[in-house]
Amino acid sequence: MSERELHIVSYFSFPTDLAAEMRSWSEFVSGDGYNVRLASATESVEVEFIEGELPYVAVRGSGLGELFDRVLGRVIHALAAHSDNLMVNRVSRAPPR
Image (cartoon, rainbow, N blue to C red):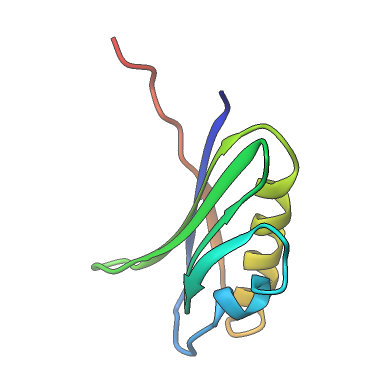
């Protein structure tokens, strides 16, 4: 099973309702504000706002298909509408030993 994760760092000066961006999608399961859950027959994707010293939006997906890429594109596009600076980092997970 494919596991993917990216973190998007921004200023988050203006709230972005990512759930509203994807609520009409058939894969939409639940969501509010920055936090969204989506699922297809072969994939599940979660978007989560993580607070802290350097807040970020995490986009995590498991399974195979195009849903992760569609969600990631929509999240980046929506966040870019409210910021002049986004930094996207791919998170690598080492396999357990």
